[in-house]
Figure 1: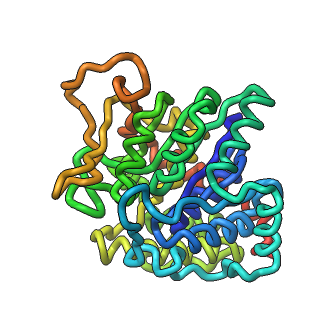
Figure 2: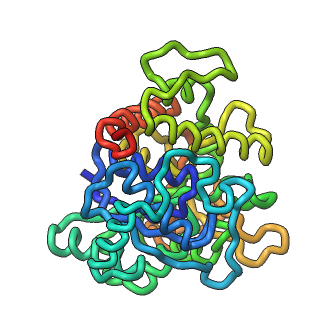
Length: 354
């Protein structure tokens, strides 16, 4: 069983990552921290609380607000893709004023951990020092919180098994010619994390762009026991939860079609981080040295992957070694089987269906 902490910026695909973090086999979610990114920090925090409630997270799994700006640069948000509040177009998800969600916020505040990095540190101490197990940190947004944690608490890094992040690319970009959005938002933070002497795995857009929610998968999401309809017709949703997730996917699909020209459906970028931790053999990875371009006029935020081994490296996971595994391939059918199985488990317990 892997003990995981999820740092995210919900975000449509981050929402699916939260669902998988709660219901995937082989993982135990310790908590969630939120960061600026797809929308502002207030909305990402409230969206995480809404998702924890909707997907029936255990009562002791809390969300904590983290950095509202990058380390050095102005904050970026992406309403073109995610809407103003980060979960544009989603129907059936209770608002932040729902009594159960307010109760979750008050319960998190009662723990005394008022910042993300304090909460991460306490979870790592509890699992690492007291229970003698390690924690996997998962990032599905800009890595500001993770960079602060590794900088402020270097003594806790021995209790970190791995840092897994969705972000970066090998020779591609999605929010500049060569930069992926999560890294572009805070490239300095990403470089700090890459320098940390801890095993790391990058799930780049080269891979996430293959995990497409096709029409057939969308039909199975809505009603797994009914025949697949001919596009563009979708079956009615079997449950309220499935309707909510369908509206999430539909909005994301329209954004990706209008912005990037994706015609087969949207990619579920962030959920792949949870899939990797739950079933790493689903992925093919190669260890490389990665740096982030910090100063380029046209290339800031690019993940520079030394695929030809130009740089001499030692055996460490830090700044002088091959510091990161890079995912190259994912078993897409197996990933969506996991996704649909997690949805089936969530369907049995979610308060949305009551």
